[in-house]
Image 1: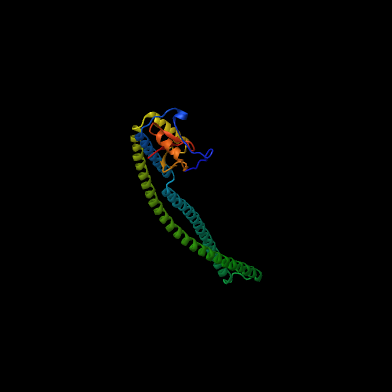
Image 2 (image 1 turned 120 degrees about the horizontal axis):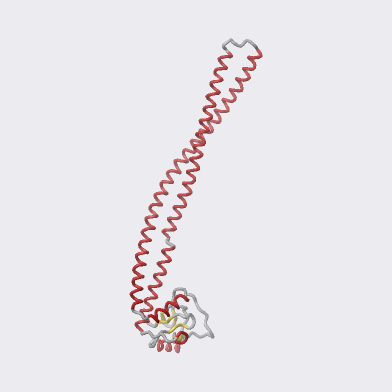
Length: 264
């Protein structure tokens, strides 16, 4: 509860009539007003919980992680598809080079070429094809290694995605269950509030609602021992006597925090 500052070192309780006119209330009605405050506090807590469910936070965390894994999986699958295309392209090129190399080698040894100059040129061409074939084989080996690693990563990410999807499903069920429980409890508390409010006259309810709105949801405070439960300030013996006399006639309030005081 917020602690209010004393004025002139004094803490007194004054009747509602001192500011807003006389608000008559029996001791029973004052206790019911305190009951109403307890219910309103509970309703406020439930609404806050409903808006800030830890189960929702857990679900959001799992769902966010699932989104990241799914995005990584999608990117990895795209990389794998690109590697597969590159592998096929290099395999086709290697096949073309090997076919041409075979043809040119056969032509070299067929005896059809008698010119030394033409044979020298053919040897140079065959040498270039051998180098190209070696380069393509090295590149293909590298691509195949990358593809194998990528396939393993796709498998791992796919498994993780399935696990997280199951976790999201389970977390959703837990969240939904908590929402239902909170909503059901809210319905009970709202019904209880209506029952209590029906026992109280309209002027008392209006005054209470006005104070509660101004005081952050806590409009009624019980006098606990010698202290106001709203601001935790202690009353003197004379102030205690004054409050006890006042509550026999109507509503009293704490001068320091402005809340309605209810004496046990």
